[in-house]
Image (cartoon, rainbow, N blue to C red; front, side):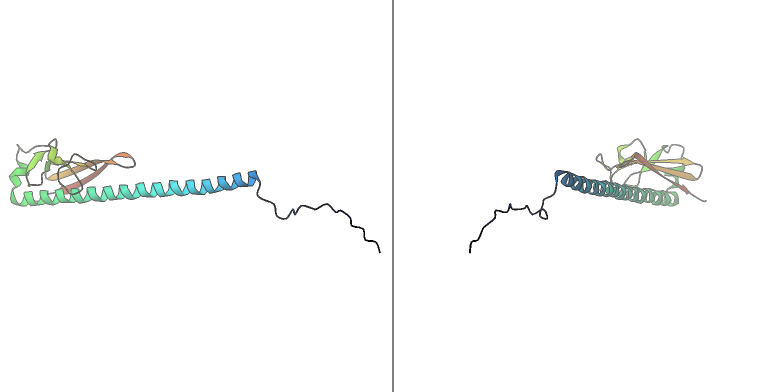
Length: 155
């Protein structure tokens, strides 16, 4: 018996091929888009949160000024209603009425005078028995932001 061996060329196993360069580039592009979108969303969310914190701080400071106006109107109305009272003004941490151009009218988040950000500039004007408090500050999103409160003193 004679056995003949034939040389059969080996076939490549086409089922075990790697990813092509185009597939890899498409995958990288998709991942980049997803990560970029997540970054933009989280960045906007962080700015909105910071802006809300600043607005909350501004409201707290403005309410404090209104409470001080209430106290002065009840105890020392001359300081607010006298013709020599400055206009516009704010009430300093020691309870005195000062012109709004004074450095004590630029306060930080704790209500104390400051020169560093965030800083809130207070300005109160009086028209008759109505006091209008305007507070401005540099917002993280839109440049300058403003808060306005009105308070009326009744006799």
